[in-house]
Length: 114
Length: 114
Image 1 (cartoon, one colour):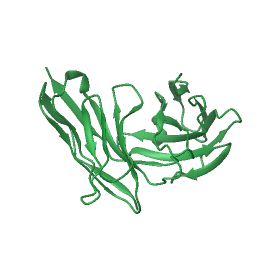
Image 2 (cartoon, chains in turn brown, blue):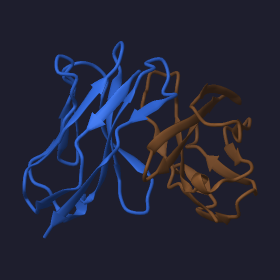
Image 3 (tube, one colour):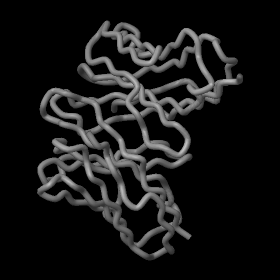
């Protein structure tokens, strides 16, 4: 079974631009969560989507948004990029709701904002 | 709120040494507990999990026991290898009915000398 895939793997953007990251979950997984990883803040939860609906949200500004499609693929968008948005963005999928609790992570998208 | 505290790194050991990485948590209710591992340049991989008190998770020679009385989930391995060099994250899921949000510790970097 293929794992979680994220595209692109690396991205360089300029301050003020916007960016869209993509995540394809493991086949059959309906929940997709996004995390931001930085050296200073560690791993922080951004949001979770389940059946095309945002079900849970972390403490990030409205510049961070996401969506999920009917095939469970998810995208994350960051508008008006700031230097502090430079991070590794990780996507994780899970069966969710079936009694299993673990999440399976993709390799991440490394975003650099200059 | 819920939180995870794990020992500061980096931890440097010689090959075949015994490993312990301490992890304690604060949570209401009965969270599920996890250890994730992150190898250089990669996303997180689930190493092991425990879903209720006194459960022992194990994988690849690593073990951790869910201790509700001490709110701990320490990671141990009897004989480490160079290939175990990575960053280890202790984590909890505080929503037993879904896997929507995982709270991570700050991570412990482990380096094994040949």
